[in-house]
Length: 141
Image (cartoon, rainbow, N blue to C red):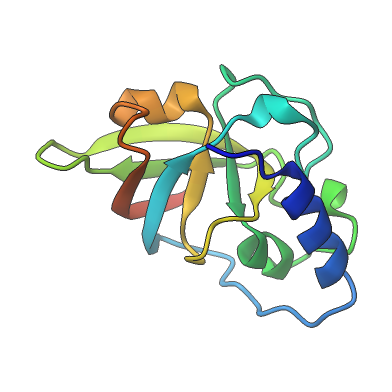
């Protein structure tokens, strides 16, 4: 997938002074898409460098910024470092559960309940060539 770092940084900076929608603190969260990205392109919104082999995830900027306790400094976001369990069902397959650690914000995630994961996680569900799985369910571990 495309690098999202510049757009994430810009969107977080633009949303710093703007009012953001409040996000429910508890799930389950349903109806989003599972996609993949390369976290190795640079620092994530949580301020860390991650490899494509790290089991990390990015949540939509609106979710990330609107989560209770979020401040204008994304490195201090209470979501950073939290684990989530995602259930995704590839087309024609059975549901697969994966666990990820939140490390970034997703600039290209249009659906508030979507999750963008590292290739190492997406490939546990289906081929990277698929690119997107609709209708996931996820919650905090």
